[in-house]
Image 1: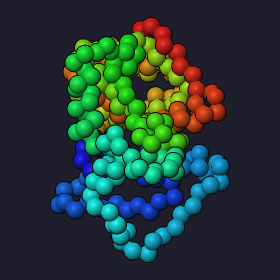
Image 2 (image 1 turned 120 degrees about the horizontal axis):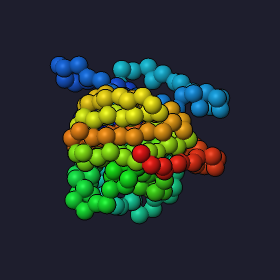
Image 3 (image 1 turned 180 degrees about the horizontal axis):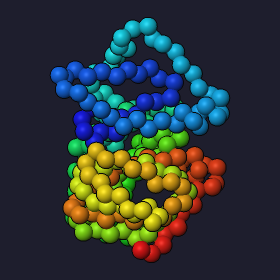
Length: 215
């Protein structure tokens, strides 16, 4: 895990956390616990060991599913992406390439969603995850949507107006845009924002909507 990486914890899968360095670290956890608890589909099982055994070499999932390739006999399985780590270095390279040609969306700059390479759908069935680049000097058009969204600034500095309140942000800052609140982003320098929301669930039950307004 490196700064900016997007890492998935698949449903009903073992996972553990560790830090092999001498420096402290932190990450942002985005959880669908309230939804799963409401559905009464929550399970917890302890492994009984400090670490789970690793059965595949580092990079196996990326090579097997993340290189525009799939195993020849692969069949659709979990709705969660089989790529468990989306490295920020690769994501940032894609954003830089897209920034060369544009065009830039009036409401989002350049905004992409992380996907499941097997299905083409969102990387996770209950949470949508997104990355967006705002060129220096960008002021987005007013936007609102029904999915409440958590934002984390990865690079750059700027301001975001949510309703009538303005917030300044820089690297590692986190802010939340509630459902259907109008939002406008301004980038003082080239900036990258990561975000996640419950958009996939809303889309599947037919209630997601957006309003692309003016500043």
